[in-house]
Amino acid sequence: MSAMQLELSQRTEDHGIADAYLVVVSTASDELVHEFCAYSSAYGGPVRPDPVTGLRAEQIDKGRATVRWEWSENSFDLASPGAYFERDVILDPLAWAGPVRKTPKTKPVAPAPKVDVSHELRAVDVAVKSEWRQNGCDDEWEIHVSHAATGTKLVWKGTSTAENQDIKKLRHTEVDGVVRIDFVYYCGENGSNSASDRSLFVKLGETGIEWVPKHVCSGRLHDGRCSGTL
Image (tube, rainbow, N blue to C red):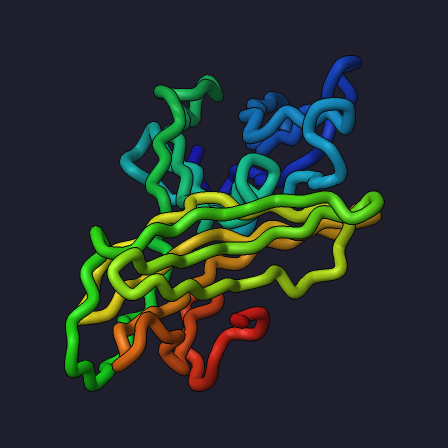
């Protein structure tokens, strides 16, 4: 038997407390399944797992093949760039030859903009924090940046009108004389969910800290101040 004789597919099975999302490897007389996600709306919410993509089998030698696929991992983390997966299979008799192997994809990172600065701003000189409040049934998030030496402050206010919002992975670092603020902005309402990686840039001006008129969204550098910067 060769890898060309394998039939590859994917399906979902109801296992009672959760739905099993499966990669299926089959022949005319036998079948193997690999569970890539177990999903329950009671615990996982409305983010149903994406199907796998790029499902294929590649021959290793006369008796073995490697089954490969890609998956977004969206039910675990909407902001994940996804990963590559592979699992070896014995062709006759049909059996898995070992555990699955995972290689995370690399998330694109836009370079910091080139900014002319007369005074360098260090990460240790600014304080960055997120603040949450509830307005009726809606979440509202802000990021506050303060510079003690000059007593100046900046605010970024979330621009989404989605009922459910969150800010995660908030961190800041100094890059070429400015401070880069990275975070992930999650939004969701009525089963529609999204996550975007954001980067804001702060410089030290004549009277205090200022927003740099550049920002990053989902790995791309954009001109102009990010919406929500006050």
